Amino acid sequence: MEIRSTDALIAVDVQNDFCPGGALPVPFGDTIVSKVNSLVIKFETLVFSRDWHPNNHCSFSDTPLFEDMSWPMHCVQDSPGAEFHGDLFVPGDGRVISKGTDPEREAYSAFEGTDLDAWLRERGVERVFVAGLAFDYCVRATAVDAARAGYETWVVEDACAGISEVTMERAREELTAAGVQFCGTSDFT
Ligand SMILES: [Zn+2]
Image (cartoon, rainbow, N blue to C red; front, side, top):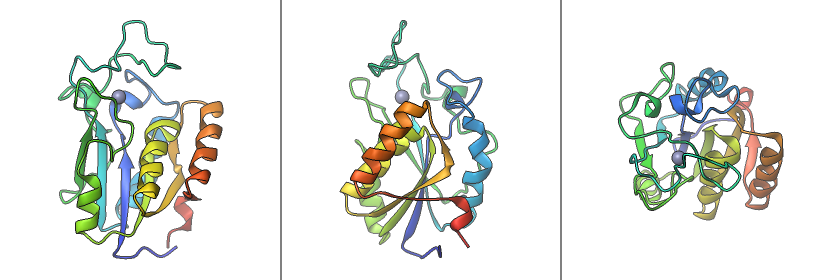
């Protein structure tokens, strides 16, 4: 696959709290960082989304059930857990998109409540490649929204990690139904 000037990479939530040792770890979440970096060095237009919650965010619970989308406190603004993984390469011209910043609103997708769509359009982006954490939640939601917004959308599957096999399978079905396509890091020249 040849990368064009009208392509963008969206690296979703590669943050400490979503990696092993963090508040809401994705199994093997840290193992995808080098894969994401291998993409970062190839793309010109780069977006890095981050979960960026106030400490009273509506998704936080002292007794989180996970299945009902209540979670332990995670990615609190300016906390070490909210920082990008230390090995993630974030070039200075990469655009950082903060989501979930409203205490009353959840945002899995990097498009939700942000100016990402307008920013991509301004740059003439036609095709987006999505990677990061977690495959079954924020990568899924971001890719579905990208497809709905009219971008040709690909998920770079080996540059993602997910929470569980069950939710990942469900996510694959939803992504396919939305017209999202799948590729791997080895597909890029
Ligand atoms: Zn969150």
